[in-house]
Image (cartoon, rainbow, N blue to C red; front, side, top):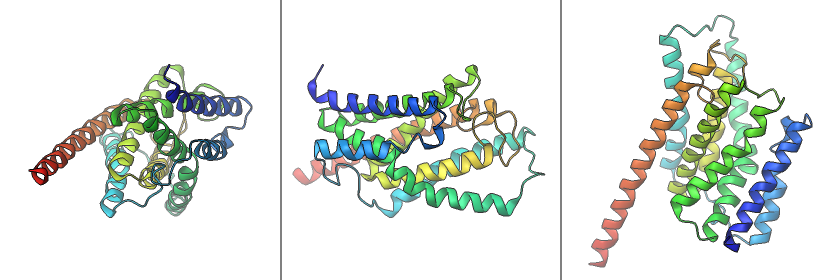
Length: 265
């Protein structure tokens, strides 16, 4: 094994093991918190710059793309559920829902920046790049690690756990989510941009559809079909969005290459 790859591998295994132990001990509500000290230690170990860690602001249009993803995909999943007659909002307290949504987004941005995004799209991203991985390899590896880190949450008794048949769907969706936030990080250079998108996604997905086998504000009980994270509709929508972003990044790469060639000529 390339010794340069040992650092991202060891760091990722450490994160997975620590979180799994916490989930197994009934501490799942706190299981993301160790990512902060672990990420800081690993950051200090490898001496990354703030830019390598993605700790830059990003452009206004990057935040537009960050918001577009959860709004489009979760909005489409909600619309499909509505058209299928699976929505029942009769018991929803609108004021409470919007308050929880606002708090979820505002607090989520900071928490995700310090934990999941700071670790997977911050330290791990920088570590993979330094280890010699290409841009696309970094995107895939960090997304696989992000998905595997969630495995204990949906397989152990955490409140987020799922029926066995839904676990593969969730794991693939988690991989696709990681790909989207990785491509946002790639396009913007900013882990904050990915954190904004992640926070809005969590607030909307868990507010409207809930998590595990629970029912959210939309009253959709068939989450295995319509859920944006655990459902087949979500799987199709997330897969389509990843494909579109991939194509868009490819076009931008070609444009940048053409500009560089023109300047050089």
